Length: 220
Image 1: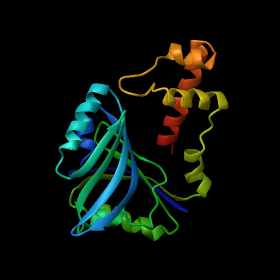
Image 2: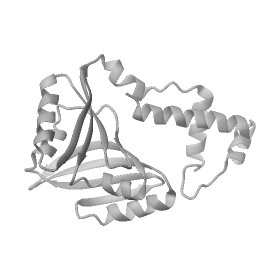
Image 3: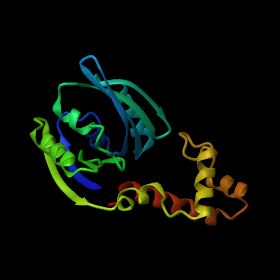
């Protein structure tokens, strides 16, 4: 399978410029699209990383953006539906059903997007690149990787991170008990008590799990 990774910036981006203004980072999970009338509607989930107060400001910005049709926020996870003019070639190319998104896009606080694509056919990705280059709102594009790889080099490290059972248990408990809620519903002391281990041990297990999960998202 062919794998393409690019660094990209376009002037009409809904999401990245405001991240830069607020000094936030985001991981963009594409959840599909559909056409209706003269528009293409895209669904996505964005994990926001940074100051909780600035995340609240970012949600307010997204909620009031003219291209956003629907949005909800849960903790640091933003769910959005955006509307784009169907005749715009760049969106047709980016959301071509023959192209796979093997990993979430990384939206940096300097307005760049790190995006990965995969396809069985090299030409599908070449056509996508040509479309992005021709797009009148593209301001920067750099190919970081374009190669034919085994599927496990593209997908498996994302789907199955190397997390130990203790690390997995710590992460699942933290999520279940609301440690990542805003405001937090529980602290490390109470989580450690539930787990019947010391606070230091629980913290270490949780931090290792968090690092591995984040590394999984931005790897390659």
